[in-house]
Image (cartoon, rainbow, N blue to C red; front, side, top):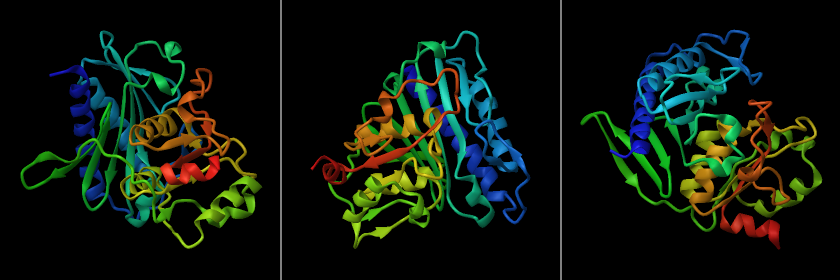
Length: 289
């Protein structure tokens, strides 16, 4: 089996282990006050996901190490490995206490030295998992492919192969509850979507996933309250932008055509945050006209 697909299977194993934890988690328990390296609140499931990621990655001799939203620095798992994984082990974990959807995000680089990574264009593959009413897994290399897990037959079934985002969506995803902090260019841009429904799950994976499948846009740029942005460049933006572009969309850090994948790898700040603007073909045309 080709090496990259062995890594894909490892990520699928991780997905299954996390889904099993989520199914039995007592989501009435209040979060603790622990914070991770990115400055976010951490609950018990975040901790468990972090531990499981190290265990699962250590079992694959091809994985040299991983960089996680939950860790300060890179963790080396196999000295003779060839690949580095970036991971957001549990995206949207604030949704857990009300039993809502969460996800996980992965990026794959073929190297053993992160100083060799120039930007997001050095990714060779990326993916994400949606933990919801079904267990869904995206793996993107040259083709954007979707799988769901059949618990009856206990195997992964591919349900979309070489997916392309629809030309135009009926929804858009943005937190308009903080519109008082939006810059004027964003206010003007989203005025194009009057009449569309907003869908906002407070989980990047599920919000991006919905727009990828149905068409539309996911918008979480910098604003007057969060001038540096809220999304982690390495763990969230790079991988999701890789998938989004492969599907035929465009992914920027702002409304000025500055592409996410072209942003320099933040070697001195692995938890750097940025803005994220993910646009389908029609939605992208609106900022170019």
